[in-house]
Length: 534
Image (cartoon, rainbow, N blue to C red; front, top):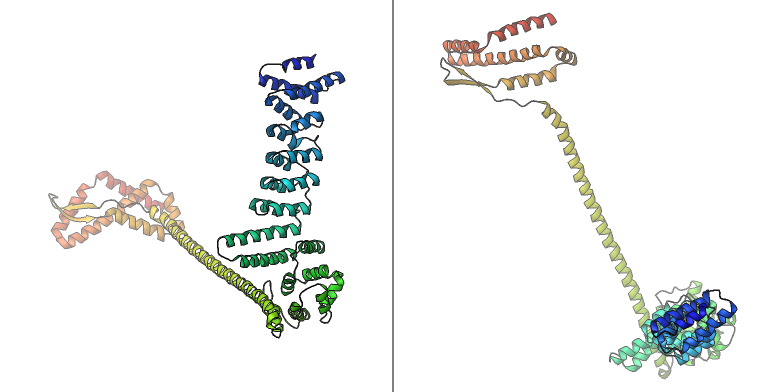
């Protein structure tokens, strides 16, 4: 009953409503646990929906069935041949499609279809090989960037051969963790060809010079790549070079002059057909190498250069001489040039020209190494100078902070003593004369008291200070006033000496008249108490 309701829903006039009905019907078939009869009816209805004229309905079916392994195979195969927007949904994920379906879709579909297939997980060798043969640069970039794609070495080389001039493809290939060594060399060689073509097109080099530069760059690249490689990878690279026509006498001579004897022995073994151990023994024998040279098919004109280079290498191996330099060894090149001096000019010219280029390359390599070392030393000295300046600046700042700390501590110690001393009041003017109109002297009584107390506080022992602290405040006040009056009396005496007897007497009387009688009585009582306390 439910299936018939879905079928009735799929007959709606609106394409959007029909697409919703198709999606619901497909999901009910895939995940609804229908009975046999209901499942058959649902499957039949879904297949019938493939004839719907609206792409919205077929897209809804593709979205519902793309990742399901229970989807009807006729439905998935039909959707894989639909419009690219619909076909891409099932071609990217459907587990129903096999290698034949994917290869056929890649062959019949456009670049958009091939691009979608290149991103599928766990692509097999067959599908990846088909894409490598017919895919465009964008498809090959996605295929190379797919880490789960199984691509053979031959197909990788085919990708480089077809679209190796694409920089993004080269980067994607070099980023693969499982990229074989021969493919890396092919990528480097294609890059060298691209650069040579660029400088030739710009008119900077002639085509002949550009070709030679490209060849020498490829030779150096293959030696750099093979230096850390194992024996199996080295054999594959040598076979690849031989089949591609890049294994020649110049490359073998460069390997010997560079000290890459493992590569040289592998190359001579491949060219001569002899066992690797046998070739290694002949290379280390001065008498046995000429026969190996002839069997490998190398030019006879290069035999003196090969023999001299191998002789220098043997001497270096036994400690008789030292080989120095980065890459090519200038000592071995000089030995080879010396050995070629007795050759006829017609044979010597090409060999000496090749060795001269190698010598120039070795000199430039050594100059780069020396310049790099000098630059590193200069950078180290500059870094040391900057570090010394930084340390000196930090030391000066630390010294300044320490001096500021000492000044602050000194001020902190001096501040309590200054705060303990009370501020001196304004001086008291004492006027003489009957009318008191003219000032005679100014007596700073509080200053005198302040100095006396400060002197007493410093000079008195602790026992006397304790006795004074125990006295009543009235007695201390009276004592302080007595001290003030005594100071004033001494000042009056000084004034009297200067003014004369009469004036002094008049001034004393004026001062005594200003003292209240009660204060005099209190002073006498305090004097009596002080005597009793003593």
